Amino acid sequence: MDTAKLDSMIEHYAQSHRNKRNEIIHCVCVPAIVFAVIGLIYAFSLTMALIAVIASVIYYARLGLQAAVEMAVILVAMLAVWSLFGGAHHLAIVAIVIFGLAWVGQFIGHYYEGAKPSFLDDVQYLMIGPLFVISVLKPKLKL
Image (cartoon, rainbow, N blue to C red; front, side, top):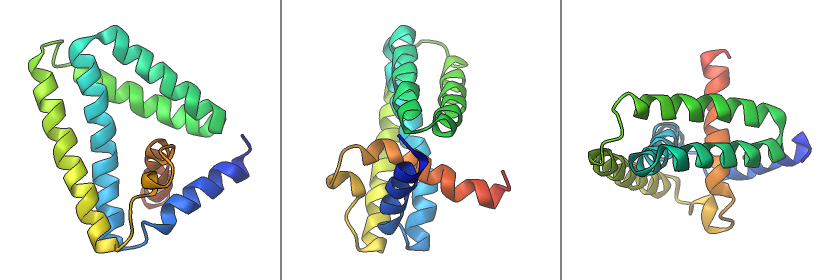
């Protein structure tokens, strides 16, 4: 996919995330959701977590090399954090709690925004959310 298409997707996502409160909430909750999903999979199988990370990076590679590299670094780092806690099944409970709280945050953000989440139009936007967060944070962090 060309970068113009990816930029267009991120811009479409950004259109329903213009409220500063919603943007801040998303910059916290989207990574938390991704972290929780990886943790939930990891709690049951390291192999499955690795497969999920690889499949995600392949998806992002179809969007662009930069997206794939950025997401690979983030996803591997998240998996590494979960691995510090071992493979105990209690991690699933922690991941589910993080997941639930982060989604509550997302919907609170959209309440402030007054717009429905982008993924309700196209489920693919669940994967674009992390790239939106990167696009918001990179300039602020001067990366």
